[in-house]
Image (tube, rainbow, N blue to C red; front, side):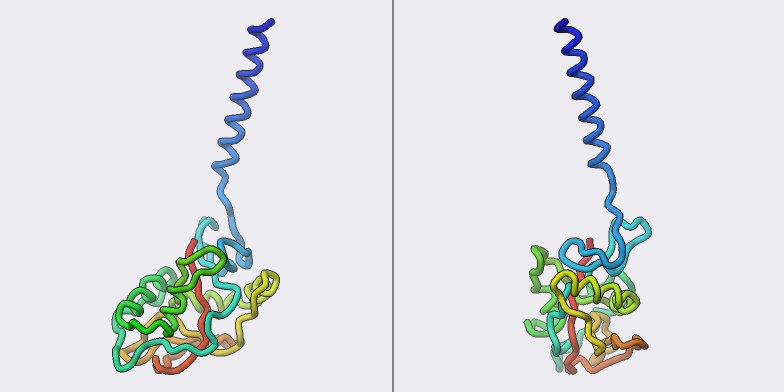
Length: 189
């Protein structure tokens, strides 16, 4: 009788272990607008497992991009995936703590400290999902993205950088780096 009980117990434990391993190997698939890892998902890669989130609130309503007369010439990435390096390039040249890139780089929000200023294409992805992001931001205690200009981390020349107007047209254009614009940080997951 004891041998049968031990065999049953081993079978049950083996089944439980295999079941737990299968559950831990499942991948999390995200959706645009999900609140995840400290922000609102606004971009996903082809797998749906990795992407970008934006903060639920603005970090500044009027920050400068650069630190004239010093020119930042290395932050030229415009595509998705270049905002983080652009941010590092900007703060590597401009040591002022109140510029847009430094505000994002120094941010700790919802237990995450790896925020950065979005590139031109990253900010455009936010604009393309603006209604979903605004709804999710409000639902998670944040604020809507304003229908005004936001800095990107993408330089467009020595003393200009790209901004995105978040109105319905969503135009992007060059602005002098000593102008003041809104800032919303993002992070990768």
